[in-house]
Length: 174
Image (cartoon, rainbow, N blue to C red; front, side, top):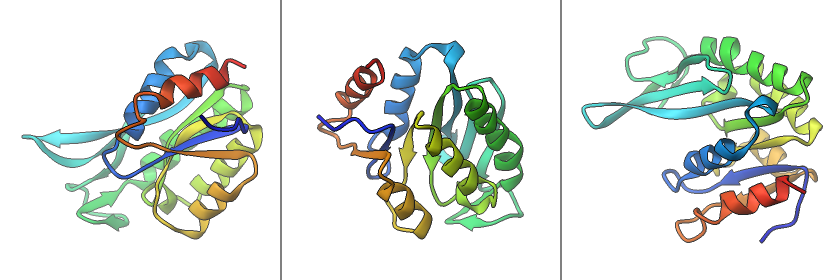
């Protein structure tokens, strides 16, 4: 079990199930009072070729893809800063301004190529209504977020990944 702080961020190794856990949490939250975004792998013939984003209000875009030819590069993917700025940022602003529960999947290197992302994440965290995921890697911004007094970081492992969504939901109901 973990101590209730105002914002809850799941972390863990790649592939451990952070996004799956967030989806389980989102499925049980009231749709009318929950906003934010989820990320998904884009697969072609069984191989990952990129990452998609989808807001809880239904807007879709590309976070990064092997077929993009411009933008910042992370591994074999080019990041679509334009989709971060025009899809994710307005969704987070709307969530923050409408007093909704804010879902952020995920706070990571790709999203941070947008100069708008980190300041908006800070504003969202200031509300105390964020449930999200955060990359384990070290960086000044990621370290800053993890060290905030109003953030509870929960490490997801293969052993606890099925229990954590239930625990988070019980904390949110208090």
